[in-house]
Length: 221
Image (tube, rainbow, N blue to C red):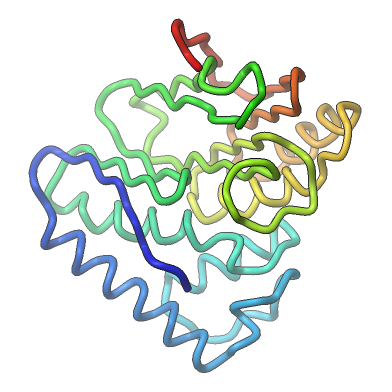
């Protein structure tokens, strides 16, 4: 595993609690990798074995999405840390490499970053307070260093489980090779239980489906 670099927003300073949660979470994942090395590099779902809850969430998300379990790691860590911090804060937002766990008492706008696409930074998903906690996760073939077999500039999935949202964002991005792939892929991902919205950006094409509102951002870039 690489370094963990989280951006956390809460009602107060929770640095010590966050460090403790991250350390425990990483320890459980790294310990599982030592016991089962294939967990780290598998590109397809693995048969689950007895494991801590954060690892079990990654196995389950991978099975649904049809990807390797590490495709869910950023979302799983964000949710693990976020839910732990809810002991001390009514509102918690944890961003982990573009993957977000969100629990808020107010509406939040989550902008979509899509590299050089004209939509990048110009549209955002509106997440009502009553719809949280949720995971909002994005995969891209053109932004960042994550492995992708697709071509989407951004594939964003909103789901009740951040590990599931993360794994499905990867799987969604993998399915996009050309503009004609956008609509059938949206239909596929919205048919999965727990998913409430998805958005896909490929160059100058944008597809979105679900029960959230996509809003323009003035002055975006």
